[in-house]
Length: 150
Image (cartoon, rainbow, N blue to C red; front, side, top):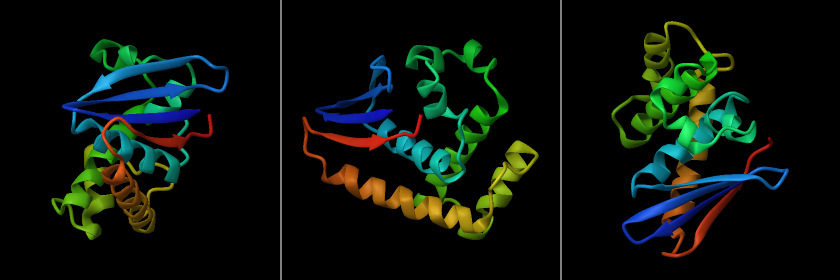
């Protein structure tokens, strides 16, 4: 799947094009690319197939994934991805210490997601930092493109 985040004045657009050519898209606010990039780093590192991008690759629309009633029907890994993406953002902005990353996630989820270690947290942070740097280099009207395995 191709993930394309286009930078616009006052807002951005996320378009995910699946291998079969179908796509879903949404206008996203100026800060949402950061959260979406955190999802990408977390879900790729932990091979999550049922997180945000896995759900889109499987045919879900962004409208569905913004509906709180629908979200409640998703597999537990979708919530894991959400919690870990937020925790990764906290790690990146200094609100979460590296040594606390796994513990904070465990506390909120009341279990340890498969593959979550402090080392995985370090790799996620490195990937996320690279993605943030790449996004900052994108000119208005241009896009950051990523590939998703599904």
